[in-house]
Amino acid sequence: MKKRNLKLIFASFIMASAVLTGCGADKETTKPEETKEVETDKAEDQKEEGQKAEQKEVKVEDTDAGKQTAVFTEMMEELTKAKENQEVDWDLVKQKYDNGLQKDIAETSPEFDQSIQAAITAGKSGEMEPIIAVQLIDKTTQSYFYQNQKALQKEAVAAITEGKVDEANLAFVQIKHLAEKVFLPTAEKRDGHYELTGDASLVENINSGLSAQEEALKAENAEDFQVYLQVTDKSIYRSYYLAAKSYAEKIEAAVKEGAEKQELAIKQAEAWGFFQAIKGSLSGGDEAAAAQLDKLFTLNETDPATIKASETNALFAKAVAGKIKGYYEKAPKLLAENNATDAKVSAMEGNMFLKMLQGQLTEKLGEEKAQAAFADAEAWYNAVAENKPDEAKTKGESVIATVNELVQ
Image 1 (cartoon, rainbow, N blue to C red):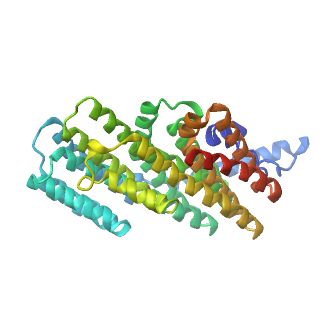
Image 2: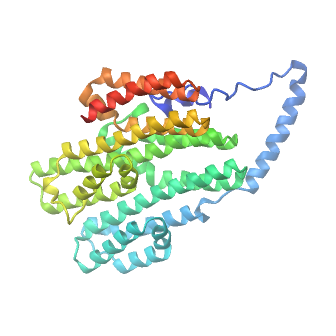
Image 3: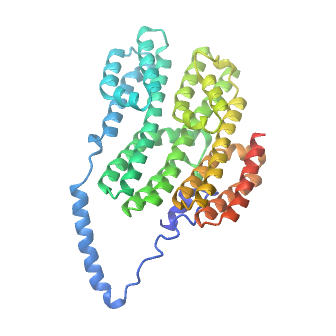
């Protein structure tokens, strides 16, 4: 990985200088008299590679992800009419959903399918306000696309590991397409709401992760691809987390401004839909906290007027902290088992979850303490990557102590 990419990818506190310590280090030195011959051979190789690439070019619109996002766009074009108080053709929406998305969504998550089908039915019958039904359909489908992205990432990893480059490219082309059509627009809104720029920007982190993955894919380096996968995936994850979190904050603010119940319910539906993407994962960090968040965001279980940002923020912090602790325990164990690749992947996951709490750490503990934790997190990752268990233990304990202080 070129050094210029590292800052964008790892941000200020997880600048993992040891991730790709071997990259570029094993290049053979070319003698002056060999230069011309090497350059000629290189040009021929590049020509052949270009021809192969042209022959194997993937048309993204013909892929499953391409077809699914096209159907989703068509559905949303019709559903958006509800935002303008126009009549929605619910039969058309259902037809497009049934023919283009239902099967795949049901296979990935029967709960997602049930929620979308129920929202379409309720929107058509008038049992639910059309705009609320629209938000449930929109955000739950986006949650499906996130899960689909994770499945495609696994396919790509398996393909690279097995030397099936064409299959890996097919999966990765779809991942990039989903990012362009679904994840980056959502991330851009979160960047705007929380004023995230530079290495804190979700858009920058997602794009940097994708760029690093692409370089690893071209090099057919499965290990690097898996490590950088975590930058891409967890940055998308963070956008869904911040989306749900922000709607809880917006609800409380709207209540203070005297907003009508329907406006609150719309925001609650959006929070619920975004939360579905990460609910299962957060349950692994703290099942009770994740369950309570799901209950707070569920329309028929919680009056949105009672939602408090401080409660949802604390629940999110508790669940994310559980994820961090899990990976900080897992990575050293994998290292002790001589599983260096999975240890680095787990270490990166732990640090990407830590990044999700950057705002809360800074707000509660102060900039200096937060930055110290991020510096220790960087050192911890490097110690894992360099197989230095004693140093990893010391730095890891320091990070976890700060995390515990946040959630006390």
